[in-house]
Length: 325
Image (cartoon, rainbow, N blue to C red; front, side):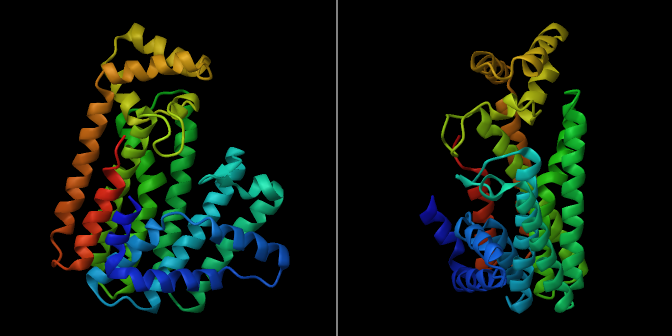
């Protein structure tokens, strides 16, 4: 899988190396404690999908320059800030297989670090007059927060419909990938119309990506480093379950919701819910919807001229959505 990702990165490999160097520099602080923490954040980087979407989107529409680097850095700073705050809110002790900041340095310091990263992103944009980039990313962060709150509100009653589910993931997950693609295009001098098209492209990818992530909850344990049934244990209503419940009788629906509300820590009961979703066609349906959004994204991407960046964007979408369950 990593070799495939290296192939996808090929058109932007030197750019990504330069980005990593610049991002490390942007995280440095004269405050020793803060410098140790930001070094820890940089050290545990993930696959860096977001910068890849920024740079590939930029290359598709023009030259990848300093503005593109600032766009990628802004998104990483603000996204990292939201993750740090999320871990505090969720009382989570792990992130990508590493201890979370709040687990190592406690909540107060973690919140302050999140605030610091947020301010770094704002200052980077204001200092370079990248107001369009700041507008795109700030809108994404606002929409992500709305999505989180909408999910919390609906989770209390477990009454999420398919339409509400799409609205939640459009806000929570897709908005950031949309901002990556839009910022990339904008940083390369694309027109407002093209920036909006790339925003929609990223939104479609984000929806497909989240559906795939939800499907992992029903796949073999350990495929992505987490056990199955986690969403059920956390009473999260995802597309496979929502569809299965929509096809169930009133009595069956009541029984399954009772398990999710009252027995979601019982592994035997959780497996019972997983079998119900499988037998009700929830996994098949969610997979079909994922490919629907992927194909819609490809149709939009194909309206732009063919080049190596477009090919890599297509491959990156496949990489994110076609990982085996």
